[in-house]
Image 1 (cartoon, helix red, strand yellow):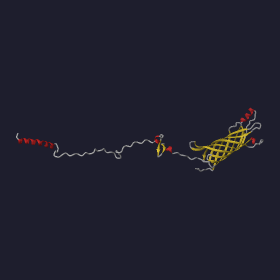
Image 2 (cartoon, rainbow, N blue to C red):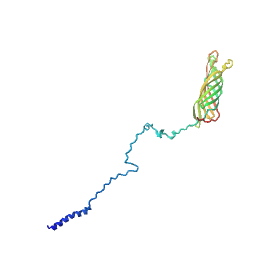
Image 3 (cartoon, rainbow, N blue to C red):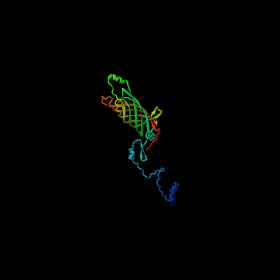
Amino acid sequence: MRPTALLAVLAIAMACPVVHAQEMGLDLSKPAEKQEEKPAEQPAQPPGLDLSAPPETPKPAPKEEAARPPGERPSGSALTKDVALGDKVKAVQRKGFMKKGRFEIAPTFALSVNDAFFQKFGGGLRVAYSLQDSFALAVRGTYYTPYRTEHAREGKLAFQSQLLSSQLYGQVMLDGVWSPIYGKASFLNESIVFFDVYLSAGFGLVWSDTSFEPRREGPHLATDFGGGVRFYPKSWLAFELGMLATLYPDQPQQSVPGTIQKVFVANVGLSFFLPPTFDYDFP
């Protein structure tokens, strides 16, 4: 081969890689540039959430809340009942009547209940003054009329003897009246009636058949005790039902030793309060 032909072949062989490289899109004439490394993008975080801060550990429940009974919840610094509003609001109603500083005038009717031979019935009057709403001092006077029943006649015929019984004609007593219970009741499902329960006890004088002719022993010392209930349809009016026992020493027959005589009577009466109106007295 000629030298000129050989040089031509070598020149063509060297030119072929350059042409092929340019056709593939590579530029071999310039050195390759180094690409800058970009930091990896972090996912976007929702607003208001800081992922950089470590999560807070939940605090343990206070001992007060752990020991709290069911149905209660804290309100400020104190525990309040978790109940309905209707249970939280309590209505306190005023009393329908007040007796402190008022006078009471009470006519009564009395009937004995423990003597089968000599029935006693009569009437009386009680005047009282209330030192407190639940306590009063009272002066009571009662006059009795004895009535011989059919049992007395039958007893005399059967036993052929005289019945030893003291006949009570009258009494005057000084009593203390205490009213520890107060309430109200519905009457015929239409109106509310107030009431109180009272207890009474005292001492005084009684007159029996031995107090007059022919023995003329005069009055006998006596004591009494009892109780009852009063209903107040009005603030100035009360209806009363009660039971009263009177005890006194007497000697119906001089030949027989004296004994303690016991008279139990049922009382029915009306009480009128003066003045008719009253004012609430708050301490």
